[in-house]
Length: 494
Image 1 (cartoon, rainbow, N blue to C red):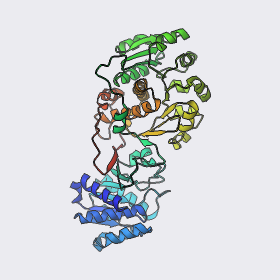
Image 2: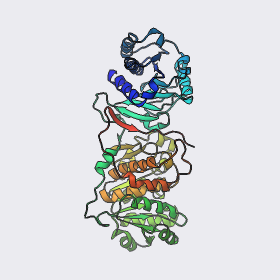
Image 3: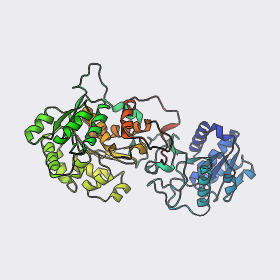
């Protein structure tokens, strides 16, 4: 507790030095989260900061009582309010530290704590900065739910590991910073997947040798682009080319070929193969990996094509969009067709629900675990898109990618992801690695798009694709201790 509070106080002083002169209000709850808050109050007071503590409920846990005693021996009596004192917050304080409710809290906040949550959010709307300790009060650390009300933080300082609730409900957390407190654990909790970060992606991305040619950089076939849906295949091709593939071939409906050749001259184009021999000629003898699904359509011709390609092509395969929906309630059939090849599925929650025969509400509620049974059944890796994105291997390993912004919340975003992942699948032959790395790159490119805070209108996927060039350049310098990981704030946007 003392390590956590001291690390938090140090981080607050470093990030908000210009605000400390305006005074700090610390909200201390009755549990161990309140104990952390008392440590922060004491540390800031020692540093000469004018600290006021609001204690709506007396300390209850042993550690909280002990830390309160240490802090009150140092703080002036008049700076401590033992009942809800909204006046301390209403006085236009510059910075508020939220230590009301921690990871063990469940249910809707009540009584004086609920009153303080409202007062804190009101103060933030008037310009105060809010720093939450471990989780914003009112946020369920396990589910991300806010049952009734929750503090909206500008910065959440969490200890040892990111919690599931942070990843699911980024909007109330602000910037999320994981601080080391000497537990020696990775930056995710034991019941959450491993967090994909810049260093990990840098380590797993294949290097391009000085002697590379278009063959060694691999060749990707993208099967899709039914009439009227060529744009999906074009987006996938552009993302693939921006991701370092050697060659791309778009295998599309005959009516889409002229569109493809005009819109994306850097890619080859051919028509949907009508026979097994044509699959071998256009894909089997040429490609290192295949992406099936962007703009594929759901008609009988599309279904026949999908099954023909899967029967004839036995190499690394990515299925997205319509290729997943065409196997609705037929996961067993898909498993038989995939065999033992390296494979990756990239569904959004609705598509996942279709192939796994599960309602969307359940998919979202169980997003961290629900991919495992399907991945095992298919013998493939499954990338469940969303906030956050969860990647599960057929042997039960899991990654989570929290990279991204609402710029990606638009039609075609999944096609861009397919192009990135298809390239990495061709170059690594590993669906799990390709899925995890591509999810982070996809999100990181969106984070790089220049934008006015809180306003994403006017931005398109072209902006994201353009930023892919820079997204492949990594900053692998060691993090500033005690920071283990940092996730940027995601706020509501116009």
